[in-house]
Image (cartoon, rainbow, N blue to C red; front, side, top):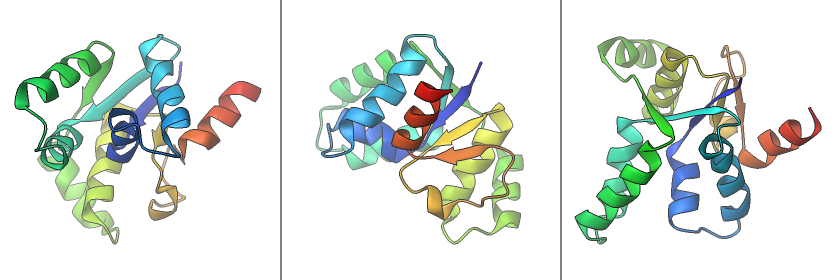
Length: 139
């Protein structure tokens, strides 16, 4: 079974119904909700989303996160992941933290809209929602 780690931007596409990315991001997230795959994010994404949506009442944000937790696991993000991200030295440290968290969780895929910012030699596939859906539907 595929293990999809969802990057912050994909979750925000769904939560904010961002055009034009909402349909594919939502369909990709629905795979975890339906049980077709296992899904995860991490505390960094939850924190980033909370900050980005800080104008939203906290009770609404917590309600959304509780619903996401019904089907998303929380991938580890600890000192080992931070050290690995610092050693990897990607141009964007947040991307490195997301990658190391996904790897620690055992993700088979990291789903993000900025796949080009991740290394191609990671031991998981880094794909945009549209690319994952294309592969999933045909494979």
